[in-house]
Image (cartoon, rainbow, N blue to C red):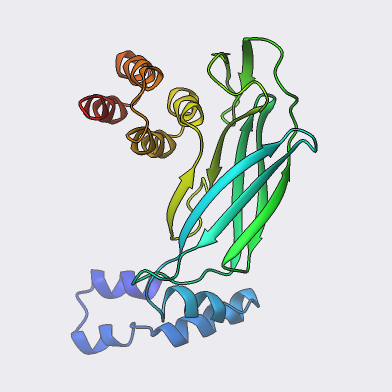
Length: 228
């Protein structure tokens, strides 16, 4: 970086600047030398090859065992899609708080059981702790009384380049839009709620649209979804 900065400041010639160029192969060698880590698998997947994984997911809750049964499929039939091998973070927002777990994707179909930390609700209203540290009062009348899961996010920090199609109930998306503080999560919920044109969805969209605490682009998108 110091050499590159000096060359730019001194208006160096083209020949001298060409010596500052670095190839992918030499860059990987330098990284491996400095970090003592082999990044060849990462380079093969994200640099030398094209395409990205396409994930299709859904979940069910087993009250008897108090676990979330998560299923993730990798669709490699579409042009540009590729199989992903690696770890993926799953964040579950429960009645008792937000919990993250890391799973390993190895096969075309992956099934995992995630431990649930909450019990089935007893009250219609409850103060829920969020990942942001805030606590919010939620009206739980519309959610499944047999399931303490409010919503689930796959790879919430966008660590993996991927396409994702995740299925959860309409009240899960409504809660995610209304109470999740992450803007990208709110946009995901808005996109999903287009498939659930119900009175509860309209009320949720109207609440977010009228809220001065929400990001203005989220409120604009709420207005667009309402027109559908």
